[in-house]
Length: 331
Image 1: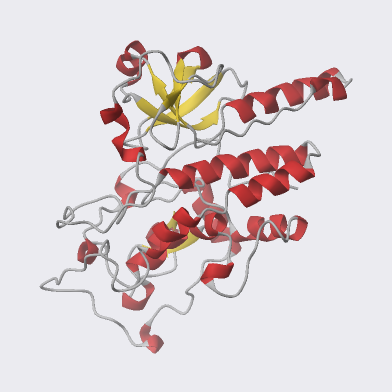
Image 2 (image 1 turned 90 degrees about the vertical axis):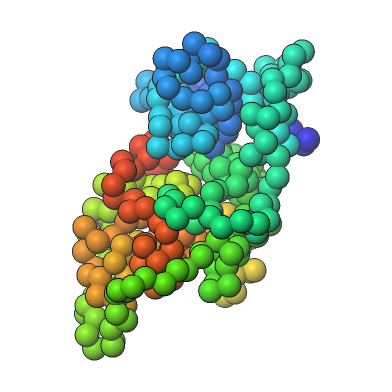
């Protein structure tokens, strides 16, 4: 397992306020958004979360970390840094965060089987008829979010070379494989089913005149939904933020005309604004009929209704709340 370590010296800052800012940044570089950790039994009982949690943010005073249950990202809690246990590596092993070595007694590997395989093969049996998303996210997506979050922190601290390296590191082919598994009518994860009375496909002239949301509507959607896909829960990044970062790091954040020529993490995490009732089938471009989604979940559903692909209405559950801001703090 390759381990990347980044250190930022506080001796470079003489101003107390700047030192405090760098201290908080170092803490975030140690516990980065998207990282998986274990929590002990007392914390599990107190919070109602499972053994493995994903860090999704920090409290404003940086004294607690906000975590989400790995198996159910809608369940979140604030916990003390001292309650965070072992780091869950992408190969499924547990690592002591301080020493960087495996603990003397390894926890059961059964608890982390879901992170052992980076690219999940096509399902061998029918999927559930009612599900939150068409395919669960893979760990690399949250690892990429962690890297991009660290890249923005490095950029704001003037570490432009480090920011460039982190953006490149987030460009993972496994994420591309995950995205491609959801695109197109032949995806094994879409699983379309006929309904007795489906919504009709309307001629173009009978559809709502406005298809894409206005800037004000996008702002309202993010105010309500935050910056996580309402279906699969992965962090998303608005297109205007991606463009802003690419202007500063054009080689690290590649964005060509075709899908293979685009940065795989930014591509998958590109914020979309999906119609619950599809626009082509009479859905209006209104905030009440739209949710924030990632690119694969939006494109994967295509023009199908939720019922036709067996998806639960995401509006019936609370959106994920975290400090992930879609990298909006980049400037």
